[in-house]
Length: 149
Image (cartoon, rainbow, N blue to C red; front, side):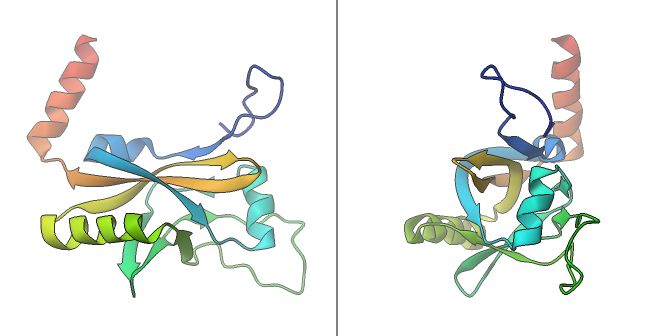
């Protein structure tokens, strides 16, 4: 997905998609969050070495954190750093957005899942969504609707 060309002839802005989230959850509100990354992580993102399939977002100390997102370090990474591909990464959101997420998770039982990672003006952004888990019969209904179309 990262090497796909867009209409202008440049690189596509999509880095990674989480298609599994659409299957496992009913997605409602979507938010755009920035990521706190290290230098080697940005280089790996540009090379498309990222997976957000099994990742999740938790709220700790009134801050949002991305867990289990795997950013594989490049082989040409510097020798004086020891990259951790599974480290937790802080998400950058407005206070009002954070309060809305916290309220939905604590009071209404929602989960926060990452759905896509992409570039906006040279900065990596993560699209997150408030989601309710689907039951097995909901998943079967989604598959049936998709097959009929």
